[in-house]
Length: 102
Image (cartoon, rainbow, N blue to C red; front, top):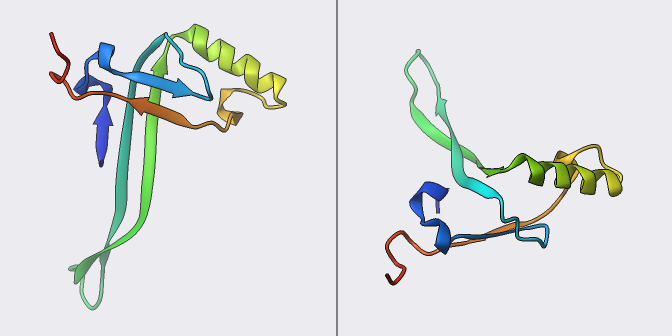
């Protein structure tokens, strides 16, 4: 999967587990996988080819400020400074839009 955004699913069909908990105040999430590409130059100023390099992965979680406050408290209790110091897995499960029975 190269790209996923919470706009592509219906909220009743999306569930997120973050660090073993399921925050109920999540407002959005996204995921992007990409591969670095760089022009390969030889003689002249026109690239001879495009070479691919490392893979890169990034994501975004959106939730209410109260959840962030709780994450900051958990990080402080674990010896960190803020929520960015927490190492945790994020698992998102979903059904495609329109796949839910009405």
